[in-house]
Amino acid sequence: MSQYWSPAVRELTPYVPGEQPRERVIKLNTNENPYPPAPGVSEALRNYAVDHLRLYPDPTSLALRETLADTYGVSVAETFVGNGSDEVLAFAFQAFFCHGAPLDVPSITYSFYPVYANLYGVELRKHPLNNQWEVDLDALANDSERSGVIFANPNAPTGHAHSLESIEALLKRVADRVVLIDEAYVDFGAESTVALVERYPNLLVTGTFSKSRSLAGLRLGYAIGSPELIEGLQRVKDSFNSYPVDSLASVVGIEALKDTQHFNACRDNVITTRERTRQRLEGLGFEVLPSKANFLLAQHPDFAGAQLFAGLRERGILVRHFNTNLLNNFLRISIGTDDEMDSFIEALESLSG
Ligand SMILES: *Cc1c(COP(=O)(O)O)cnc(C)c1O
View 1 (cartoon, rainbow, N blue to C red):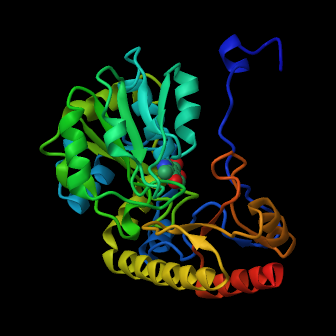
View 2: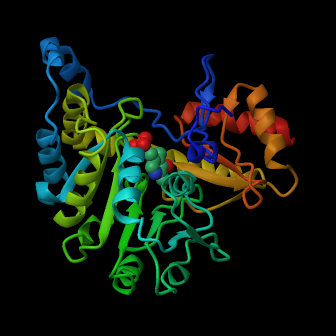
């Protein structure tokens, strides 16, 4: 605490990201991609004219948004890019969720949403997951007064994804406010709601280059939604920082979007390894939630999550453990390479044997 801090800053509870260790470990704690970015990325960086860095980047990120629009089959006016999807989410909270009514969220979802709610003074109305650990879409839409609805699909850290039809039903019931679907993990096996953007002007879909495109260090995220929602985001962006996406990130992002073959190959590898890991965990007696993401959420009936987390850490393997009542017994395990997952399973065998 400092006397220099504004009162509101004293009240904040900032998000705590998974650690980024300096020593070599097997890192299965922050859902990064174990495979490198598309080969075109290194080439674009090698060919980048450094003199460009003298100039401010295009404040509209037009070239990147054109490629994004092509990739997702939408118009440029339906796209927005930012410095990681976390920033896009922050803009969305300010642009759409400050109506003085509660924001409907699942009680278990991406833990950055409560942090933004706190920052922007938005009250949350939390709805428990159903008994299958799935987001309860009915409950989310039950009340009549709200500032909006937000959740991740696939959800974090459970990995469950709803179908397009179920989400469409929700959009119909919440037509007067923005429904934000965070698709950070959609590429690992879920259906994207981008297909619904044209019919639902209240749908905002966010995505990231951090997971399925192996670019977490670049900080690039996007939103797709109706032109009126995109304009709302732009109004916030241009009142905060008109140049969130730098010139290098634009060039790299374009290359990553263009290489569908590399993208598909990495995604398929992650999915195959995920299913293999799930089976092996089940073989060790774990309960593993079905996942459409690049991570698994698992718990063991005989070993506490904190205990396994600590034992793995001693063996140089980092996973994520959440110190909350509901998730206390679980581990969230990002999917690495097959070799990394072999080491992880071996470590677990020695811990639970
Ligand atoms: C990783 C993640 C993000 C943030 O992605 P960045 O683009 O790296 O900021 C957003 N939402 C969810 C659910 C995530 O897991």
